[in-house]
View 1 (tube, rainbow over the protein chains, first blue to last red):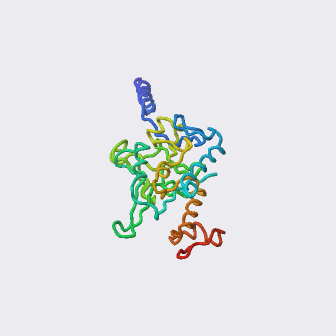
View 2 (view 1 turned 90 degrees about the vertical axis):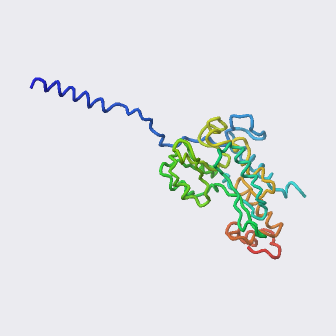
View 3 (view 1 turned 45 degrees about the vertical axis):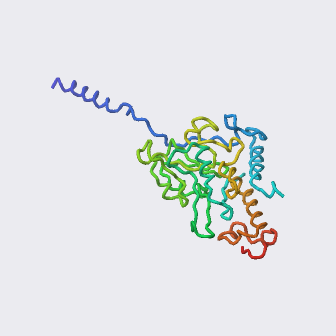
Length: 76
Length: 209
């Protein structure tokens, strides 16, 4: 009967060892937030004519750029 | 707010596959994945029609609806993007998409079906704009460089138009009215309205709306 407390302690330690960190990396479950496109890319390929961080300026650039696809403005 | 859209003019597409090639080169898309492709109906028959197809960045995207891990998101500009760090490569989106836009690499994290890859409207992904991490996962972020998608910008016949939906729709509408051909296609009236109702110039004889 004297061995019972010692056995309980050993069992408690063994159970405690099962509760540690799993060591498995958790997959991300939430999307990262995206950066808005009017914040200019960090590379040297950004075209001039608009201001980084200025949404209205970027939208104007997009509209003007889209008109490059309209050949009725380029020819005739 | 701009809502980014693609329009492909079947009267102009000559099936050159330039858009496909430009997309693959611009984004270093791996072998076996085609973010964009050209589909031809009645190939080889006089009167055949071709259109360039990729993700249409749907307003109510079925891929977003079925994704079990919610890896998709829509930007304020209407571009449907996804986070490859969250994607589990299950393939539900490819079954849901009516355009076959989601593509899966044949090797990678999940063996025979890796993480999904699709057209980003040249808008990259969640990583920092123009960063190396973004480029390696999603390709170039041309929107944040002040440019439009490479496929549309380099289209030699300007069959493929990309940009703010209102702007490209105006370009196409004007083109169809000037040439007097194209408004007979199914859905034209729904998309652009009857010429008289829309206050547009009278359509030339021989066209329907």
